[in-house]
Image 1 (cartoon, rainbow, N blue to C red):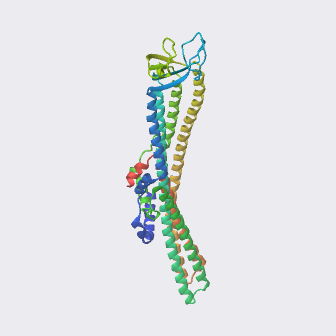
Image 2: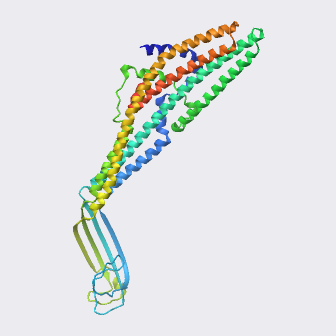
Image 3: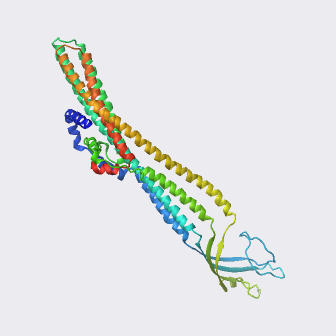
Length: 463
């Protein structure tokens, strides 16, 4: 309750100070939810991720084609000699097959044709097809979870820089107030110097302080523009149209009141989901290796026709007789193939894959521990930020009172310009300290939402 009362008091003080400088800039502000929609629609990284996900989808569909049979058609016309002797040999695809052996050599040219239609279907392989499909699906799920993590990271990135814009916007408003204060002091000094009440050198000191304030404003403006450009690059919006909604931080603080808190959901956190998918994918690859070396049952069939210029009576006829099928045959069979030495190959590949699976399991455990550690660190940061925001109102009220007193004393010639400038600096530091403390608290709250997978819930409340 003390923290809420203190924040309300300070917020009302700052609201009155920033009202004039912020009113004009709120006309063209963009809400965070709208900025995130633009990022999701236009981010170059998300577009490339979508394309890579589509590739995985097509690869998964392509794996289904492994179940299809092979049907090959071949037709050839050949000319050459037919002069063979008995004896076995390994053809190696170079020596044509022929079953006829002659008593005497004959080097006459023979012309023949051959047409073949062959069918080969591996219809059962003891689970390899299912393992291939599962592995392909886990590849798609892994890519899908990687895309989801990338989208989540970009959302967190956008929220962080949107909050940074809010901080810089507030600091610019405070700096404008500081410029106004220094301008007021310069006018007062000029009047007092003309009246001979104070030395003219005070005018130069006031001019230097005013110039310093303007330079600080320029630097803050540059930082603000740089963040606008970063957000414009990932959202596709014009940088000039990316101006933060000043009500956002107040909504964030209200969201984290006791009755609006949501329980964390680290199990379905996109980062954890990604490493879980990687682990599942490696397990699927292990299963695929086991199934890949199982026996294979195949259905094979062929039909072919043949013609030759050599007759059935071994007569060498005119070459024109070699065109056109004279004989036809067919063959159908079921066969099994198994390589005994595949067991050694399977063992070697399984050793490699199990090492990869073990690595993915350790990476998953590491990410879970890092997420848990980050959450504990953020809880500590939140507690310190609450204490800062409880103390800062005292600093700000004291700085405002000191400034008013020093300004009054200076106008009456009871203090010097050095003391007045010191009071201005203390007030400026108190105002910026409050802005930075508020920013750090909101940043920690948002990081807590990111760690606990509550971004969507947060945005629904803040919309």
